[in-house]
Image 1 (tube, chains in turn blue, green):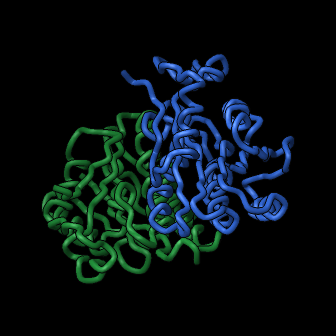
Image 2: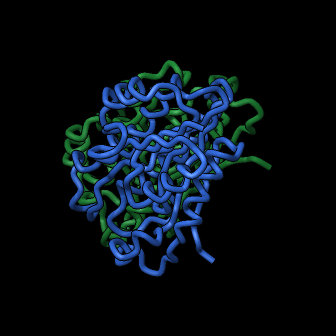
Length: 202
Length: 202
């Protein structure tokens, strides 16, 4: 398969890219580094990326940001960051990318546990994650040519524990091999419209 | 209680307003009619509304729109309608309104079954509903002075069956008294961070 992985140099992205590269042709997209440069917050940049890369069998997005801050300090503008990047960035990737994915191919988006189990300071991040979950269920009803779409929503991943554990009291870190498996299940499986939750609440 | 009901003249809103008016002081906000005029897509209009109405015990929002259309016909601009109105409109209502709700008061937002069970043409509507669900869970962790927040998510309501049933094949209509009870549970109950699902999937 020819797989385009946007955010393929990030914390999760580099592990996922390394894994898929063992069996597939991987093209890494990134904002500052990668095989192709793309800023998903800018739909013109997404268009240019697809024109450069051409047809693919799978698009994986592990990119997008949102502002973390106390709700009573958040301005309307602060919310716009997440709306433009992690929310509409991923929506536009599907909207524009549907013409560049081969029949039977797939999209895999990324959210996170905040959609279901938010923590302090995440009103914007939780919101965009929840929006993507419902978007994926809805758009799966409409994509053509057998194109599938799923979203991987992980808990606090092991490789990010050092940086983020203070924000996630009592959250069990998710081993990277399980996170990778979420993406494998979406790309190599047959499911569509799935929210692949990689949480460890037991 | 002094209850501000935005969208209090709409299909659901008029039933909810009538019900609460039996026991409480109800102020109806609307885009073109009501005790106070407000367009939730414009945060300046929200500010002006709260300045005019003053402190309240409960804010209920049954307003907000999003574009319904086939995904492959949706432009980026089409998505903006829902982002500005039903999504950020409700977020801004809480963001600005938190200073106008009395201690122990509440916010009640409105979404719909599309967040969990979308139908065709609802990529944008489902997305904004799902975003609000996660937002409510997240912001409930941060509101002060015992202010609560919940969201009522109804299935196809009985009073809208005639207009919308073609879009919801096989959906069981929800009786209006059950929909009203969703809002009563939020406003007069003690829960917070709840997604009050009024679905009938049995």
